[in-house]
Length: 149
Image 1: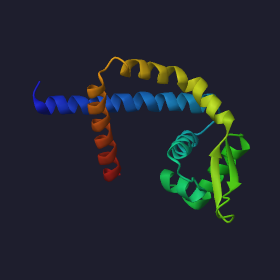
Image 2: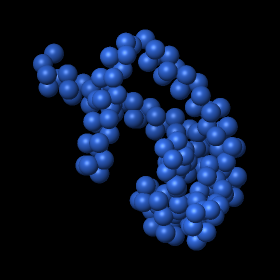
Image 3: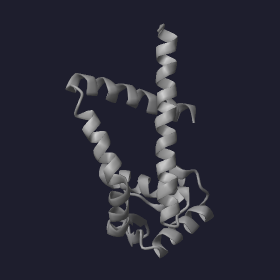
Image 4: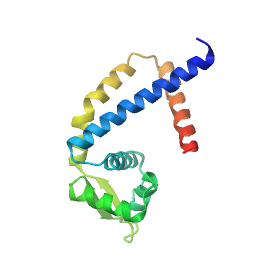
């Protein structure tokens, strides 16, 4: 295989992984009466919690590229379903923070846990240096995709 074929092969593999994850997310959404945007919102909120980001409705709307009305409808829907909670920011009582409820975490772990376990087991078959290379590659792909978007 020449270099271009190898690189394009990686692009095609990434696309295939993306499609599989999208299909998995769509199935999760359908089983729980959610819209795909609801699932993306939950993922962003979980990532924010993991990174220590204070997630506000404005921040979430920016992540999802939703206007204020769309974001409000989304948060209202997730709150009504018991998946997200609004609370006042103790540092600034004018600010509303969003937090994923335990119910959403349990639903996600129940559904996605098996595939996450399989991915972790697959990663365990690689040397640390190989994983570092994969991490560096995926980070570069993520950054280049974000720039293009």
